[in-house]
Length: 488
Ligand SMILES: Cc1cc2nc3c(=O)[nH]c(=O)nc-3n(C[C@H](O)[C@H](O)[C@H](O)COP(=O)(O)O)c2cc1C
Picture 1 (tube, rainbow, N blue to C red):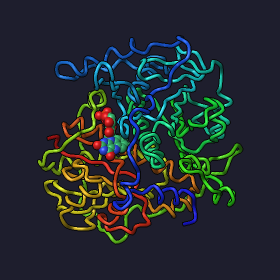
Picture 2: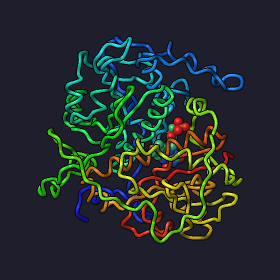
Picture 3: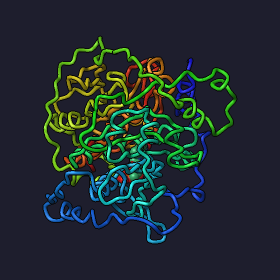
Picture 4: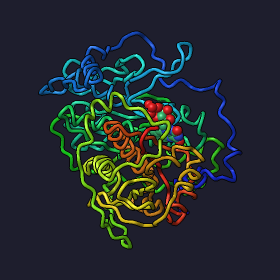
């Protein structure tokens, strides 16, 4: 195991023998899921969201507002809300829980959304923070930051053409409070979910959006905030038209061996793993990715999936909730095909090199698909049988005994040969791969919601058991499990 990120992944595996030692979270110390804002200056986005009620009332087929020629405040307000806005309230009046358009492991919402506003009609240039619970955009710094943003993104074309750049940040403390060192994994998945919403909403706005996980970390941090606990994870230049043929991830330089081998204080493993993957100022050089066959050579992809529209995605985005329990009704082959086809990340939005992320299906109850483990090829949108058999028991056990795992009609598992990924992208490999897995998960959530099915992410699983169920070597890193089924 040569890299620190492989070590991080190994050390944060859940294992049936040791999971009890992790202890319980102290609920009295749960951090708030949003930042407190100094001052009262803000832009209220609610006037730009009135159209939403037409989608959920009556037959749910509202009209989307007409799109402007140039990105404007209304458009940016809609993008912010669809990405991470508050969409429902739960809990009690004394202790409310604000649900968002993006799902989040444990409902902790450790990902924040900022905007580097460059040329947006109706909104002053500068850095703005989206404050979800206040339905507000809060000014952080005023001014023209195009030059700084372009430097932080190594002069890439989309940054210089964009009207605004969304920046997603992660706050370690918000996740670590509950998930300890494994929080980073879920933070990256959460960022992928949020990015999935943002990219889908940008398409609806008629805007180009180019997600980029390769940037100068210090450059973006300096632009947004000085706090060590909060780190930039993804930049998304948005505008029209944007050059899309750019590298969406970059290789991080090999860390200094002493730094990589340094003793890391307990509780600081994930911060260290993130820091070792930083890209310093000055262009690091675009990696020459070695192409890897998308298809697994030993498998034959003989079941092509048909794509069809899942239905009203705007309404799904407004109403989306993670499913809390599944009945045992199987999904049909048509439903399964539509779900997988629509969830495929558009190739120009995939952060990691094509073919690196493996997508597995644990088919428990799909009409027309033999129960077993299937591998999905995104290029041909076809599946190949890898292991035949009934895996409900294993699905339940590997998901820490969570019934969502055992009762789902099918599970989607994302895994990666991490050593190979590190060879290609350095320590940074983990970021684009986890965010891609989260992005796929969000598309699956939206499609399922639109089709009246249920979906939920599962961040808690016994890593090695998942590999054993898949029939894979334990060296593969399991990045995410998503579950789908008929709600029940
Ligand atoms: C990365 C990720 C991991 C999750 N892991 C689990 C899990 O292990 N078990 C579970 O019941 N729900 C899980 N969820 C669902 C969250 O609990 C849910 O998103 C959150 O409570 C907010 O509710 P909502 O999705 O309905 O808005 C996960 C969600 C995400 C995005």
